[in-house]
Image (cartoon, rainbow, N blue to C red; front, side, top):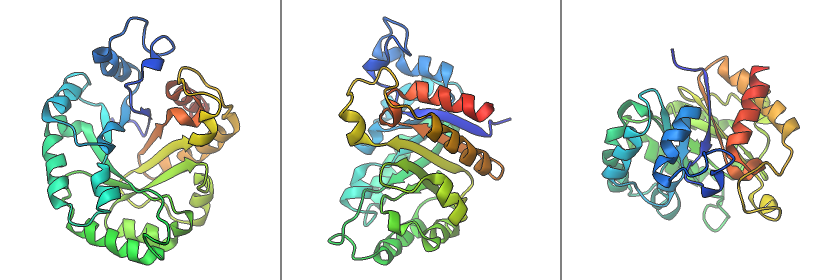
Length: 264
């Protein structure tokens, strides 16, 4: 039976984790196998910058168990440069490269940046563009979608995703509304699972540290609130929760803290 709630980190290739998470002396090539012995899901951040090679993907598959769950960011060429226009070739190339992951690949994340008025005068032109893309996308891999314009998080947005069975990525971010508030305002379950991302305040935490080996921001109250929201989502669909180092300082510890609160 698949777990109802999976909690993991965004990425695993952090040398700062050697000592507090990876045993001293762990080589880079051993990071993923050790990570997969402790957590059952991960968000691959590196694919945002470029599509992975088939050999890289084969290596990920070899180092993880069959029931491990990968979520991968779609390359920025698609989401930022082309903004999902004329990107069929890039999407097909990505899907072809990901073949070796087979059942481990659970989700592709469309992470869009913040759009100013020079890019889109309002939400509607972006929604129309997104709908055109979703209407032609192959259904071989489930999608999640994240937008960073808080005023675009409307009933129309969630209904657009629901029409295409795409999960709304719910994000704890410095300039976005808390996910609990969104759950109160809208029906945010738009696909076969829910996708929650804990990002936090990147600029704020980098004023404190740029070494990701320990918790430096007390998120206790926030994690209690997030756990309540995740419980509500999990009553309806499976939930993936992915945690960034920038949320509190050390992704693995935040995962453990959230799991402890969720299970209590």
